[in-house]
Image 1: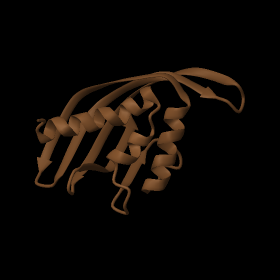
Image 2: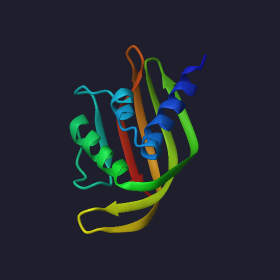
Image 3: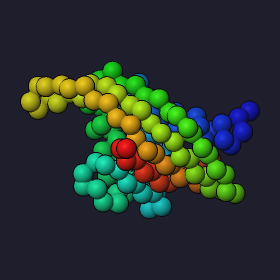
Image 4: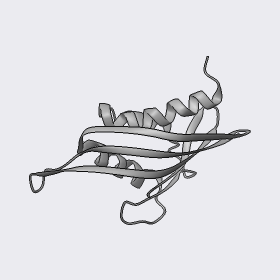
Length: 133
């Protein structure tokens, strides 16, 4: 049986594996769908996003990137009773496909990432913050 830190690490991997497998349904299962959820990212507009907006942008991103792959480095997970914070560096790359103008380009990024989790009754992501170095 996995301990809490191992479970959280697996959830983070599941999040990014959705981009590889295109099984985007998993994003609904590992993130809190309530009003507690929020996110920040480099994706415009750069405002605080709710679950509905975030999931739409995540699905759009992962659906339009071919040959997606990632690497998580320097993962630090801090447990605080029923909450946890995971901070890590994310290296990701793939081929961005734009079907509206029939083009593609190779993308690569190095991202600072923070995920906040709540455990009620299972671990769910309640906030993400990702920004490029």
